Image (cartoon, rainbow, N blue to C red; front, side, top):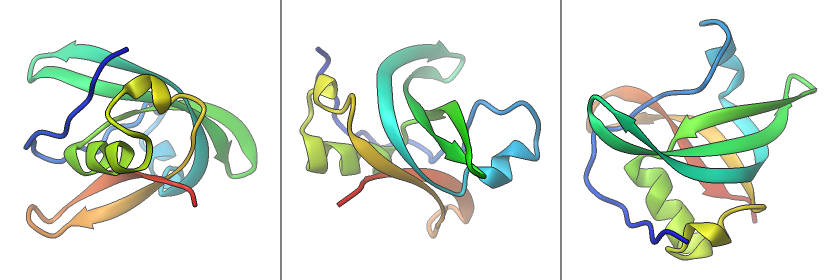
Length: 111
């Protein structure tokens, strides 16, 4: 069990993809959270969510950096204990951050 809280971070757009073209497919996907883990990067520790969903009708697994907005959404929907997030249905969408003017992937609970 790890308690997760949103902190102020620069938004990120990261998906494990086999090519740059795969990034386009990850714009709006309903998926199930498989796991949550920490990853040490040169920018510090980042939270990674692993998902299973369908991209263009094909079952696939993918990873996304959990940015600040996604962290807040997951905390609000499922609580701060990340073990409660596993197995939950969510939507991963591409949105533009108005403050930074950059695209980012946002994780939201499916209602």
